[in-house]
Length: 90
Image 1 (cartoon, rainbow, N blue to C red):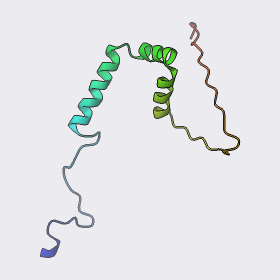
Image 2: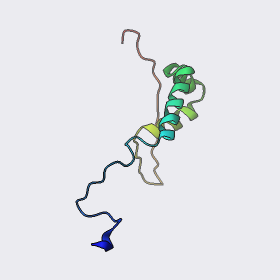
Image 3: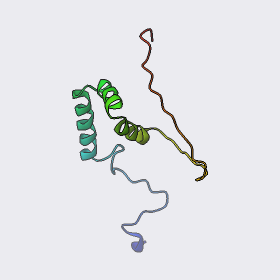
């Protein structure tokens, strides 16, 4: 039994450990980013970026939306994205 000292045993549940959600630094960084986003206008800021710099906006969009595109190199896909303002009547 002495040879197993300090090793995980099958079925042994360990108490403690790192909490879900990341380290304290990661949590603080995420909150700082969200605070900065709110300070510059939040959703209105993103709309402005989409209109003035669509390349940056779509790069951001590509990071948050799951998208897989596959095709033939000789017949590449063409993706057309159109922006339409939501109606005032909602």
